[in-house]
Length: 281
Image (cartoon, rainbow, N blue to C red; front, side, top):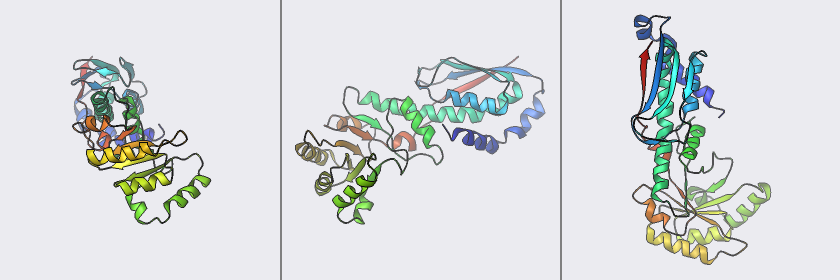
């Protein structure tokens, strides 16, 4: 993950880890300590390597012993890892390391909750671009740890033609044809809110047709239209998006859809409760 070193550096600077007035005043420089990371709540673990990297960024002599790996299911009381080294380094790294780990584990846990809700359905759970600026690569990694799939990483790896694009675009079919001639390997997805939008998307042979913010009844009509116009040569994937939550996802997953994209996986997540307990040696 190319951005992680930059994020760690910024986070440590933000926290002033080398200006820890409390530790300098109360903890002897040569004091060693052991710290054990415990789960205080059940969930899916994500970010242990980043956690260790934070400690190593402060003190390369810190020894980290991992007990569990990213993607592991954890329950309250589970021991995740151990840290041994200078007490001042452990105190300095603790908060920043936990911030990364708790945030990413929260994303992985929420993603997995959606997967458990729709298990035995063919629809796959996808994230969106609704991520904290700078944290997208990490957030999408956490979604994968939770069992989900990544939608486009940015504005460069998929053409997603949304409602505002459609307002300013004339002759969409020709535009899509021209796009494909230039970008042969880039998939094209079109956002649809009405039956007319779906008809237009089908006319372009869109690779993915997104049904955005539609009711269950309207979604069923759109799906029927898409499937009735699919052939052996052209069968677009159908994606549901817009306001999907744990209460509504099951109803949508029972429909004949391939993908469900959910913004709240990354924009409304709660950190997973983890605790680093320090034992002074």
